[in-house]
Image 1 (tube, helix red, strand yellow):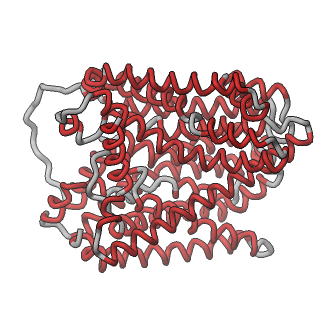
Image 2 (cartoon, rainbow, N blue to C red):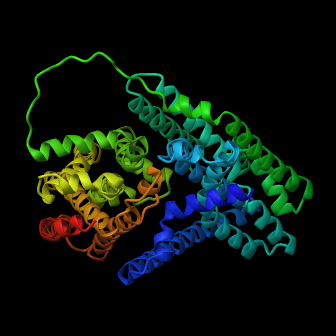
Image 3 (tube, one colour):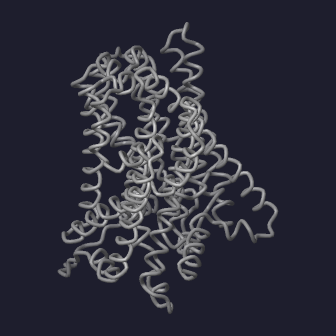
Length: 533
């Protein structure tokens, strides 16, 4: 057990950059980490507040039909879905994709202990989401029902076991996707397609369930409860244990979750080397033909290099392009479902008016989710010296990373905007704004990502997941992107009496000016920050 604890501690410290934060003597670095910690804490509190508000809204409705216990069942299902989406494309990276595989496997430690430490790392990452969702829901349930003291004991005990089974399911699915894709040429492309297919199927399945009962929240009935219980039978045991204080379901829930998790870890530990070899084996073409070599400009050469690096990492692509996929799915859906019908389904009667007035900002929201540059410099890792020593201007290096981000976002933004123009029937001015403002936001998001990553680099890492999903630069860039959208949204509502096109035009001008400022900053200060890495 001591080896599992030590390995888990080292991996978590490495993932979150705690070692440098705890032991650095640089006061500037300490202040940076303190501000970052405060920012993360604020983000966690905000998510908890949102979860509390959402849980309270559901509880108000469930109280009217006499089924308050369904609140915990619904929020448990939400927790499992969040765990699924956050684990399916990082499980393979954490378990099988670490750069320190050869180093760790050479240590005098049992393979089962190494596997257990990596699985525990996944558990720790998932339990954080469970706490942010389930604790507010548990508080709301306690306020509404005023349960016995035993409720709090059972709730806290079961909270620790909720993520176990979802981790097993997502790890198996992620490993299967990686294994199937590794059997073919273009394994990374096939892996991406399969993962996106799984995610889209789940999204469509959820929307189909809502379609059967559009008032999922407003009219929570026994039919919906049965759907949740049938989808995840452990929910029945959880509700009986926590809400009805039954000891047998409590022991059964804990036993099934814990035994499944332990059995999975033991099996994985016994077959770990074979699985790792199978997943890391890829198709290679050994027939090489000498051809003429083309000469390209430094910017285009670096751009191609960055684009190859981007598509070489499935986790990188999935984490930064899911927003674009969701945007395209939404735009296609609106061709067949009118905005009025969609508003009725999701219970936002004014959705049609909001889309007509704020469509550019809605599209820009998905753009803000697709920032590739916030981790592009950190991903260079210990190879950053190659770029620093290259006889190329720093501005060219940084702009090549911006160009990759624009390649991922701008084409899909243009296609989706054209589809929205057709479905919403926008005028020429609205259509122009719908096209230009998201493109400007794409430029702003890409340049903000580069600057934030220069300020908050993470070059010492053993797993891409820690850079792409857990680094400070990614979090800060995302927060800045959301803030840059919240302000225009707020102004649009405050200035609702004015012409909507004029408001959007003013927002576009401000974004254009901000892009110019960011570009000048990259030109002037960017080189200094890059050389200081």
